[in-house]
Image (cartoon, rainbow, N blue to C red; front, side, top):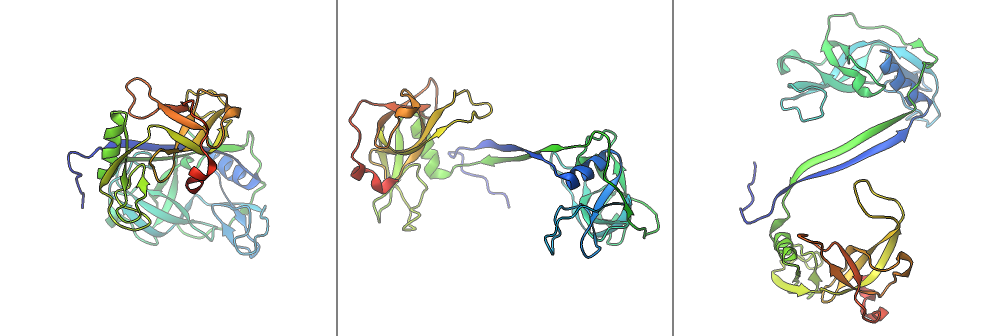
Length: 319
């Protein structure tokens, strides 16, 4: 069931993306390079089982595995699930089946997509074959998908030395999540207040702690928080770290300081960037104030406000 939020709540598309770069060992390098060359490789485990995709260590004994073998490009579906609405980035744009395929000569199954006209055309025991991508680069996507194929089963794995010209030695694995985020009533009010350059939290009626940003309920007492409280704008640095690695698409020179800041009147600290002071002069207890950029909905950073440092006892419970 789809629940539509009330019209006064904020909603926005949100993308979380993290491209992960990793180097490959000899087994994974041979497997991916083999895909580029239309060759399917597995590895022989200590007990003689052929594992596809290959792994570098035996899943039962943890022994290092290096004996590569070549398996067939045909196989048998061991289990499947129909995907009626493919998402962007999936192997096929039309409805397809996710299948586990035990390739001829292998003892384990490989997960991939099966191009089939409908779920009625898919079954456990169906014989299939690899459909190779026209352009291959040394990735699992070099297998475009599997397709039904009339062929006899069986076949044994053959020894392979894993040697190819121009081997693949590293990959970039993109991780991406697209969704629509709605912050809820409490944080919607908080964001509307920020647009007016005010910071508003909510006080728990039981323990009296003021939460910024508000959560709509006290996580300690489990009761609703409806009493709105304006805090700050000034606050105290409780803890901080020095950032020395420049983030992609972030126009901030390194090093810079990111800190937890306890705004005056708040019951816990929020985080923000500290500027307007050399990074090596930032310290616990530093009193700061927000700096807003033009048309910004939230403070761009915090800077020293000129007040004497706060005494440790005034913020030690907020560390």
